[in-house]
Length: 302
Image 1 (cartoon, rainbow, N blue to C red):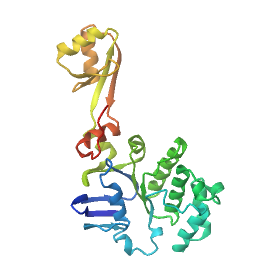
Image 2 (cartoon, rainbow, N blue to C red):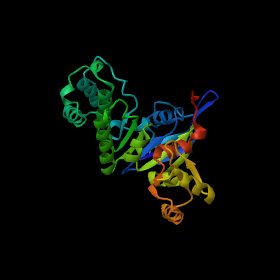
Image 3 (cartoon, one colour):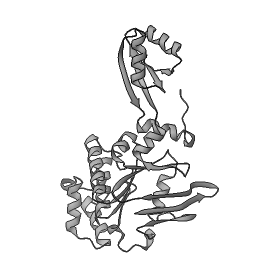
Image 4 (cartoon, rainbow, N blue to C red):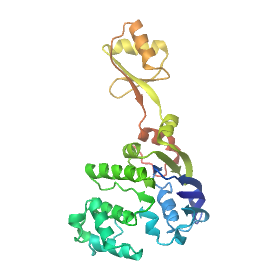
């Protein structure tokens, strides 16, 4: 388990993380979400003892990371896939990591095969693509067969097959009873992967709940409706006083009324429909709405 307790980190007068508390429980994938600059990477670095908190603490299996003996057996991490000496081979890179914790070469070959790099194991890392470096970083995280995994943007640079592979890997690792914390900006992927979400903005906790509960609480449900005669539907929408918005393709999206009621209303007024569909916000839409006040870097539309 990872237990973050009132964790804070300031750089001068700038607070990167403020009084942040949450737990990463075993047996599930916890998605760690937030806009750019929210403090996700800083938090993960403090969990791993790479940055010192201004106040609060982060515990790994009940202890600070720096007090762990042979930490690779308890925690595996991928924070930066580019942080590899380019002159080393993939196998050489993993061997020195493994030997630092008393792990044998057989395990090195096992994890290389598991991430699909067995045939490229003796190539120098400087010739690797970003996707191959991501796979190498995942292999390093798995070396000690740890019960806890922290992965920062692990799908960067992966092709569609690689993204599906990392999704299946994370879910299988959680299914084995491991605690998995993964950050990503790919909301569609998080919706498929994460059982639980920890969302932060400007260094503060915004949400700590299951993915389903987050969608129920922050996502909108509405009915999309289109008619054979758009003018008749427009008149019905206005005359009925429905809470509706027109979409870019000419349809209407109605909130506060279910599809059964809308269908009955249209039938009663002789409005023939060819689309009547219930639509719920995606995780991305719910996330964008929920974190709109926490975005630090906002572009201006042309």
